Amino acid sequence: MKKLKTLSKADLELISDFISSTAQDFILNKISRKEIDNLDIRSEVSYDDELKVDLSINIHVDELSVYDEEIVDQALDYTFKVLEHFLDENYRL
Image 1 (cartoon, rainbow, N blue to C red):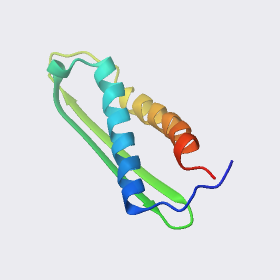
Image 2 (tube, rainbow, N blue to C red):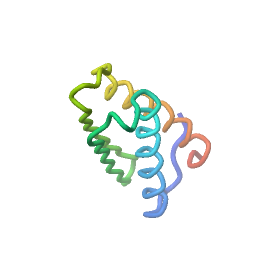
Image 3 (cartoon, one colour):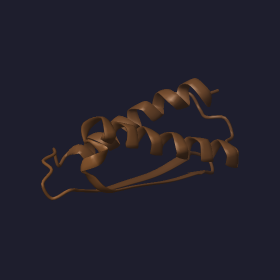
Image 4 (cartoon, rainbow, N blue to C red):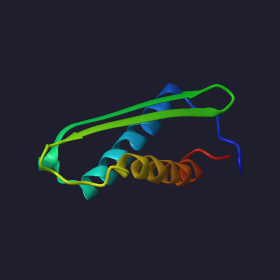
């Protein structure tokens, strides 16, 4: 795997926005927005010698809604896969 270029604060904000929107899009493709009472996606990205990403997803749906409870894990897995491609395309040396 190639090394990342030095990331600026703006780069980190862009990466954070990217992973948040990717996770949100994944979930909204699986569960209707009308069924979701609260969707909280938090991402924290930092860079010293390596990129560190912390992503958490909390979802609360309407009590009558039926959904796969593993959707959060699926969204996390998908987001990190897509992030690797995003980094390859934009930030690898």
